Length: 314
Ligand SMILES: NC(=O)c1ccc[n+]([C@@H]2O[C@H](COP(=O)([O-])OP(=O)(O)OC[C@H]3O[C@@H](n4cnc5c(N)ncnc54)[C@H](OP(=O)(O)O)[C@@H]3O)[C@@H](O)[C@H]2O)c1
Image (cartoon, rainbow, N blue to C red; front, side):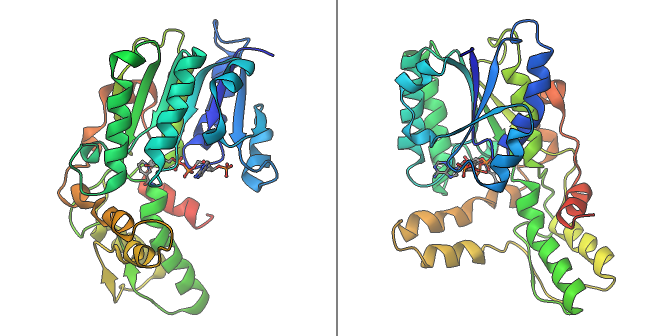
Protein backbone atom coordinates (compact mmCIF):
# COMPACT_ATOMS: atom_id res chain seq x y z
CA UNK A 1 0.00 0.00 0.00
CA UNK A 2 1.10 3.61 -0.56
CA UNK A 3 -0.26 7.01 0.43
CA UNK A 4 -3.32 7.53 -1.70
CA UNK A 5 -5.20 10.27 -3.51
CA UNK A 6 -8.81 9.09 -3.75
CA UNK A 7 -10.98 10.18 -6.69
CA UNK A 8 -14.69 9.93 -5.91
CA UNK A 9 -16.89 10.38 -8.98
CA UNK A 10 -14.02 9.46 -11.32
CA UNK A 11 -16.37 8.16 -14.04
CA UNK A 12 -18.45 11.33 -14.10
CA UNK A 13 -18.51 14.75 -15.74
CA UNK A 14 -15.86 16.46 -13.61
CA UNK A 15 -13.97 13.42 -12.23
CA UNK A 16 -12.83 12.43 -15.70
CA UNK A 17 -10.79 15.66 -15.86
CA UNK A 18 -9.12 14.70 -12.57
CA UNK A 19 -8.05 11.22 -13.67
CA UNK A 20 -6.89 12.55 -17.04
CA UNK A 21 -4.67 15.20 -15.42
CA UNK A 22 -3.53 13.99 -12.00
CA UNK A 23 -1.24 11.04 -12.89
CA UNK A 24 1.28 13.24 -14.69
CA UNK A 25 1.19 15.94 -12.00
CA UNK A 26 1.85 13.29 -9.33
CA UNK A 27 4.67 11.71 -11.36
CA UNK A 28 6.35 15.11 -11.67
CA UNK A 29 5.77 16.11 -8.04
CA UNK A 30 8.73 16.33 -5.65
CA UNK A 31 6.56 15.42 -2.68
CA UNK A 32 3.74 13.20 -4.05
CA UNK A 33 5.80 10.89 -6.26
CA UNK A 34 5.11 7.88 -4.01
CA UNK A 35 1.34 8.41 -4.06
CA UNK A 36 -1.04 6.16 -5.91
CA UNK A 37 -4.30 7.43 -7.38
CA UNK A 38 -7.34 5.34 -6.54
CA UNK A 39 -10.48 5.98 -8.59
CA UNK A 40 -13.87 4.73 -7.39
CA UNK A 41 -16.83 3.39 -9.28
CA UNK A 42 -19.91 1.39 -8.36
CA UNK A 43 -19.44 -0.70 -11.49
CA UNK A 44 -15.95 -1.66 -12.68
CA UNK A 45 -17.45 -3.25 -15.81
CA UNK A 46 -18.99 0.01 -17.09
CA UNK A 47 -17.48 1.52 -20.24
CA UNK A 48 -16.38 4.70 -18.43
CA UNK A 49 -14.70 2.70 -15.64
CA UNK A 50 -12.77 0.60 -18.17
CA UNK A 51 -11.50 3.78 -19.88
CA UNK A 52 -10.18 5.09 -16.59
CA UNK A 53 -8.06 2.01 -15.94
CA UNK A 54 -6.08 2.83 -19.09
CA UNK A 55 -5.01 6.18 -17.61
CA UNK A 56 -2.54 4.92 -15.02
CA UNK A 57 -4.85 5.02 -12.03
CA UNK A 58 -6.06 2.13 -9.90
CA UNK A 59 -9.77 1.38 -9.88
CA UNK A 60 -11.83 0.10 -6.96
CA UNK A 61 -15.45 -1.02 -7.12
CA UNK A 62 -16.80 0.79 -4.09
CA UNK A 63 -19.81 3.02 -3.52
CA UNK A 64 -18.40 6.11 -1.77
CA UNK A 65 -21.51 6.59 0.38
CA UNK A 66 -20.61 3.35 2.22
CA UNK A 67 -17.01 4.34 3.00
CA UNK A 68 -16.07 4.71 6.67
CA UNK A 69 -12.97 5.92 8.51
CA UNK A 70 -11.57 2.36 8.74
CA UNK A 71 -11.74 1.99 4.95
CA UNK A 72 -9.99 5.35 4.49
CA UNK A 73 -7.23 4.40 6.93
CA UNK A 74 -6.78 0.92 5.42
CA UNK A 75 -6.38 2.48 1.99
CA UNK A 76 -3.98 5.14 3.36
CA UNK A 77 -6.07 7.95 1.87
CA UNK A 78 -4.67 11.41 2.55
CA UNK A 79 -6.12 13.56 -0.25
CA UNK A 80 -9.56 13.31 -1.89
CA UNK A 81 -11.48 14.66 -4.86
CA UNK A 82 -15.25 14.30 -4.60
CA UNK A 83 -18.05 15.08 -7.04
CA UNK A 84 -21.05 14.12 -4.98
CA UNK A 85 -24.47 13.39 -6.41
CA UNK A 86 -26.92 16.21 -5.61
CA UNK A 87 -29.99 14.12 -4.89
CA UNK A 88 -32.22 15.17 -1.95
CA UNK A 89 -30.18 13.02 0.50
CA UNK A 90 -26.89 14.68 -0.51
CA UNK A 91 -26.34 16.44 2.80
CA UNK A 92 -26.71 13.24 4.83
CA UNK A 93 -24.37 11.26 2.58
CA UNK A 94 -21.75 13.91 1.83
CA UNK A 95 -21.56 15.16 5.43
CA UNK A 96 -21.24 11.54 6.63
CA UNK A 97 -18.32 11.16 4.23
CA UNK A 98 -16.55 14.23 5.70
CA UNK A 99 -17.16 12.97 9.21
CA UNK A 100 -15.45 9.70 8.28
CA UNK A 101 -12.72 11.68 6.51
CA UNK A 102 -12.07 13.81 9.58
CA UNK A 103 -11.90 10.72 11.83
CA UNK A 104 -9.49 9.03 9.44
CA UNK A 105 -7.09 12.00 9.57
CA UNK A 106 -7.31 12.80 5.84
CA UNK A 107 -5.29 15.95 5.01
CA UNK A 108 -7.20 17.63 2.14
CA UNK A 109 -10.45 17.45 0.16
CA UNK A 110 -11.35 19.18 -3.11
CA UNK A 111 -15.10 19.05 -3.67
CA UNK A 112 -17.46 20.14 -6.43
CA UNK A 113 -20.09 22.61 -5.29
CA UNK A 114 -22.44 24.48 -7.61
CA UNK A 115 -22.92 27.86 -9.34
CA UNK A 116 -21.55 30.51 -6.99
CA UNK A 117 -24.52 32.90 -7.27
CA UNK A 118 -26.85 30.10 -6.11
CA UNK A 119 -24.89 28.91 -3.06
CA UNK A 120 -26.90 30.66 -0.36
CA UNK A 121 -29.21 29.59 2.46
CA UNK A 122 -32.35 31.06 0.87
CA UNK A 123 -31.93 29.85 -2.70
CA UNK A 124 -35.28 28.57 -4.02
CA UNK A 125 -33.78 25.42 -5.60
CA UNK A 126 -32.90 22.79 -2.98
CA UNK A 127 -29.45 21.52 -3.98
CA UNK A 128 -27.56 24.87 -3.90
CA UNK A 129 -28.77 25.12 -0.27
CA UNK A 130 -27.25 21.67 0.32
CA UNK A 131 -23.93 22.84 -1.11
CA UNK A 132 -24.15 25.96 1.08
CA UNK A 133 -24.78 23.81 4.16
CA UNK A 134 -21.85 21.50 3.38
CA UNK A 135 -19.51 24.48 2.96
CA UNK A 136 -20.78 25.97 6.24
CA UNK A 137 -20.17 22.66 8.02
CA UNK A 138 -16.63 22.33 6.69
CA UNK A 139 -15.92 25.91 7.81
CA UNK A 140 -16.71 25.17 11.47
CA UNK A 141 -13.89 24.88 14.05
CA UNK A 142 -14.71 21.18 14.55
CA UNK A 143 -13.45 20.54 11.00
CA UNK A 144 -10.25 22.59 11.39
CA UNK A 145 -8.01 19.52 10.93
CA UNK A 146 -9.45 18.79 7.48
CA UNK A 147 -8.28 21.21 4.79
CA UNK A 148 -10.67 21.73 1.89
CA UNK A 149 -11.40 23.70 -1.26
CA UNK A 150 -14.89 24.00 -2.72
CA UNK A 151 -15.17 24.54 -6.48
CA UNK A 152 -18.26 26.53 -7.48
CA UNK A 153 -18.70 25.92 -11.20
CA UNK A 154 -21.22 27.46 -13.52
CA UNK A 155 -23.68 25.24 -15.38
CA UNK A 156 -21.95 22.63 -17.54
CA UNK A 157 -21.72 23.46 -21.25
CA UNK A 158 -22.49 19.85 -22.20
CA UNK A 159 -25.77 20.15 -20.30
CA UNK A 160 -26.74 23.51 -21.85
CA UNK A 161 -25.73 22.63 -25.42
CA UNK A 162 -26.89 18.98 -25.34
CA UNK A 163 -30.47 19.73 -26.52
CA UNK A 164 -29.13 21.97 -29.32
CA UNK A 165 -26.81 19.16 -30.46
CA UNK A 166 -29.74 16.72 -30.45
CA UNK A 167 -31.78 19.21 -32.53
CA UNK A 168 -28.97 19.34 -35.12
CA UNK A 169 -28.58 15.53 -35.18
CA UNK A 170 -32.31 15.07 -35.66
CA UNK A 171 -32.35 17.62 -38.50
CA UNK A 172 -29.43 15.83 -40.17
CA UNK A 173 -31.31 12.53 -39.96
CA UNK A 174 -34.80 13.64 -40.98
CA UNK A 175 -34.41 17.12 -42.53
CA UNK A 176 -37.13 18.24 -40.13
CA UNK A 177 -37.12 20.70 -37.21
CA UNK A 178 -38.62 20.10 -33.81
CA UNK A 179 -38.83 22.69 -31.03
CA UNK A 180 -35.43 23.94 -29.86
CA UNK A 181 -35.77 24.08 -26.07
CA UNK A 182 -32.96 26.01 -24.36
CA UNK A 183 -32.45 26.59 -20.66
CA UNK A 184 -30.69 29.91 -21.31
CA UNK A 185 -32.67 33.13 -21.71
CA UNK A 186 -32.49 34.88 -25.08
CA UNK A 187 -30.11 37.64 -24.09
CA UNK A 188 -28.32 37.03 -20.75
CA UNK A 189 -24.67 36.06 -21.21
CA UNK A 190 -23.60 32.96 -19.22
CA UNK A 191 -20.09 31.53 -18.78
CA UNK A 192 -21.00 27.86 -19.29
CA UNK A 193 -18.08 25.50 -18.55
CA UNK A 194 -16.86 22.20 -19.97
CA UNK A 195 -17.00 19.96 -16.86
CA UNK A 196 -13.67 18.16 -17.42
CA UNK A 197 -11.98 21.57 -17.01
CA UNK A 198 -13.29 21.68 -13.44
CA UNK A 199 -11.50 18.36 -12.89
CA UNK A 200 -8.30 19.83 -14.31
CA UNK A 201 -8.38 22.63 -11.71
CA UNK A 202 -9.11 20.05 -9.01
CA UNK A 203 -6.14 17.92 -10.10
CA UNK A 204 -3.79 20.90 -9.83
CA UNK A 205 -5.10 21.67 -6.35
CA UNK A 206 -4.66 18.04 -5.26
CA UNK A 207 -1.09 17.97 -6.55
CA UNK A 208 0.00 21.05 -4.63
CA UNK A 209 2.91 20.55 -2.28
CA UNK A 210 1.36 22.89 0.27
CA UNK A 211 -2.42 22.68 0.44
CA UNK A 212 -2.84 25.52 2.93
CA UNK A 213 -2.91 28.21 0.21
CA UNK A 214 -6.44 27.33 -0.97
CA UNK A 215 -7.71 25.92 2.32
CA UNK A 216 -11.34 27.03 2.93
CA UNK A 217 -11.45 28.71 -0.48
CA UNK A 218 -14.63 28.75 -2.55
CA UNK A 219 -13.42 29.17 -6.10
CA UNK A 220 -15.69 30.35 -8.91
CA UNK A 221 -15.27 28.57 -12.25
CA UNK A 222 -16.67 29.57 -15.63
CA UNK A 223 -15.76 28.76 -19.19
CA UNK A 224 -13.63 31.26 -21.17
CA UNK A 225 -16.58 32.85 -23.03
CA UNK A 226 -20.13 33.88 -22.32
CA UNK A 227 -22.98 32.71 -24.52
CA UNK A 228 -26.63 33.77 -24.73
CA UNK A 229 -29.64 31.76 -25.87
CA UNK A 230 -29.79 33.82 -29.09
CA UNK A 231 -26.17 32.93 -29.80
CA UNK A 232 -26.95 29.22 -29.34
CA UNK A 233 -29.76 29.60 -31.88
CA UNK A 234 -27.33 31.25 -34.34
CA UNK A 235 -24.88 28.38 -33.75
CA UNK A 236 -27.61 25.83 -34.50
CA UNK A 237 -28.64 27.73 -37.64
CA UNK A 238 -25.04 27.67 -38.88
CA UNK A 239 -25.16 23.85 -38.69
CA UNK A 240 -28.65 23.26 -40.12
CA UNK A 241 -28.33 25.93 -42.81
CA UNK A 242 -31.75 27.49 -42.22
CA UNK A 243 -33.54 29.63 -39.60
CA UNK A 244 -34.78 27.79 -36.53
CA UNK A 245 -38.58 28.13 -36.62
CA UNK A 246 -39.59 27.28 -33.05
CA UNK A 247 -37.42 28.23 -30.05
CA UNK A 248 -38.32 28.06 -26.40
CA UNK A 249 -35.95 30.03 -24.14
CA UNK A 250 -35.88 29.52 -20.34
CA UNK A 251 -37.11 26.01 -21.03
CA UNK A 252 -37.44 24.04 -17.77
CA UNK A 253 -40.25 21.78 -18.99
CA UNK A 254 -38.01 18.69 -18.65
CA UNK A 255 -37.60 19.36 -14.92
CA UNK A 256 -41.35 19.92 -14.53
CA UNK A 257 -42.08 16.57 -16.19
CA UNK A 258 -39.44 14.89 -14.04
CA UNK A 259 -41.04 16.39 -10.89
CA UNK A 260 -44.52 15.28 -11.92
CA UNK A 261 -43.31 11.71 -12.49
CA UNK A 262 -41.77 11.32 -9.01
CA UNK A 263 -42.88 8.36 -6.97
CA UNK A 264 -40.15 8.26 -4.29
CA UNK A 265 -38.91 11.87 -3.92
CA UNK A 266 -40.99 14.91 -3.03
CA UNK A 267 -42.37 16.48 -6.22
CA UNK A 268 -41.97 19.89 -4.57
CA UNK A 269 -38.23 19.33 -3.96
CA UNK A 270 -37.58 18.15 -7.52
CA UNK A 271 -39.68 20.99 -9.01
CA UNK A 272 -37.53 23.50 -7.06
CA UNK A 273 -34.73 22.73 -9.57
CA UNK A 274 -36.64 24.89 -12.09
CA UNK A 275 -35.23 27.87 -10.15
CA UNK A 276 -31.59 26.82 -10.70
CA UNK A 277 -31.12 28.93 -13.88
CA UNK A 278 -32.71 32.12 -12.50
CA UNK A 279 -29.39 33.73 -11.51
CA UNK A 280 -28.08 33.03 -15.03
CA UNK A 281 -31.16 34.75 -16.51
CA UNK A 282 -30.43 37.69 -14.16
CA UNK A 283 -26.93 38.07 -15.61
CA UNK A 284 -25.14 36.96 -12.41
CA UNK A 285 -23.19 34.04 -13.92
CA UNK A 286 -20.87 35.63 -16.42
CA UNK A 287 -17.38 34.40 -17.36
CA UNK A 288 -15.93 37.54 -15.73
CA UNK A 289 -16.87 36.19 -12.28
CA UNK A 290 -14.19 33.45 -12.44
CA UNK A 291 -11.84 33.56 -9.44
CA UNK A 292 -8.38 34.97 -10.07
CA UNK A 293 -6.89 31.86 -8.44
CA UNK A 294 -8.63 29.62 -10.99
CA UNK A 295 -7.18 31.67 -13.87
CA UNK A 296 -3.73 31.20 -12.34
CA UNK A 297 -4.12 27.47 -11.58
CA UNK A 298 -5.54 26.25 -14.91
CA UNK A 299 -7.72 28.77 -16.76
CA UNK A 300 -10.64 27.04 -18.52
CA UNK A 301 -10.18 27.23 -22.28
CA UNK A 302 -12.86 25.18 -24.01
CA UNK A 303 -15.32 27.46 -25.84
CA UNK A 304 -19.01 26.73 -26.47
CA UNK A 305 -18.24 26.26 -30.18
CA UNK A 306 -15.69 23.54 -29.34
CA UNK A 307 -18.15 21.83 -26.99
CA UNK A 308 -20.77 21.75 -29.77
CA UNK A 309 -18.23 20.16 -32.14
CA UNK A 310 -17.44 17.49 -29.53
CA UNK A 311 -21.13 16.81 -28.93
CA UNK A 312 -21.59 16.31 -32.67
CA UNK A 313 -18.53 14.02 -32.80
CA UNK A 314 -16.64 16.35 -35.16
N1 LIG B 1 -24.74 19.67 -14.11
C1 LIG B 1 -24.33 20.93 -13.96
O1 LIG B 1 -24.52 21.79 -14.84
C2 LIG B 1 -23.63 21.33 -12.67
C3 LIG B 1 -23.15 22.64 -12.56
C4 LIG B 1 -22.47 23.02 -11.41
C5 LIG B 1 -22.26 22.09 -10.39
N2 LIG B 1 -22.75 20.82 -10.51
C6 LIG B 1 -22.51 19.89 -9.39
O2 LIG B 1 -21.70 18.82 -9.84
C7 LIG B 1 -21.83 17.76 -8.90
C8 LIG B 1 -21.74 16.45 -9.61
O3 LIG B 1 -20.52 16.37 -10.32
P1 LIG B 1 -20.43 15.50 -11.64
O4 LIG B 1 -21.45 15.97 -12.62
O5 LIG B 1 -19.00 15.45 -12.03
O6 LIG B 1 -20.88 14.08 -11.07
P2 LIG B 1 -21.69 12.97 -11.87
O7 LIG B 1 -21.07 12.79 -13.21
O8 LIG B 1 -23.13 13.22 -11.76
O9 LIG B 1 -21.39 11.72 -10.92
C9 LIG B 1 -20.05 11.26 -10.71
C10 LIG B 1 -20.08 9.76 -10.48
O10 LIG B 1 -20.66 9.49 -9.20
C11 LIG B 1 -21.29 8.21 -9.23
N3 LIG B 1 -22.64 8.41 -8.70
C12 LIG B 1 -23.69 9.02 -9.30
N4 LIG B 1 -24.77 9.03 -8.48
C13 LIG B 1 -24.40 8.40 -7.33
C14 LIG B 1 -25.06 8.09 -6.13
N5 LIG B 1 -26.34 8.43 -5.92
N6 LIG B 1 -24.37 7.42 -5.18
C15 LIG B 1 -23.08 7.07 -5.37
N7 LIG B 1 -22.38 7.35 -6.50
C16 LIG B 1 -23.04 8.00 -7.47
C17 LIG B 1 -21.26 7.73 -10.70
O11 LIG B 1 -20.16 6.85 -10.83
P3 LIG B 1 -20.29 5.25 -10.93
O12 LIG B 1 -21.60 4.95 -11.59
O13 LIG B 1 -19.10 4.87 -11.73
O14 LIG B 1 -20.23 4.79 -9.50
C18 LIG B 1 -20.94 9.00 -11.47
O15 LIG B 1 -20.21 8.76 -12.67
C19 LIG B 1 -23.17 17.96 -8.19
O16 LIG B 1 -22.95 18.12 -6.81
C20 LIG B 1 -23.75 19.20 -8.85
O17 LIG B 1 -24.46 20.02 -7.94
C21 LIG B 1 -23.41 20.43 -11.63
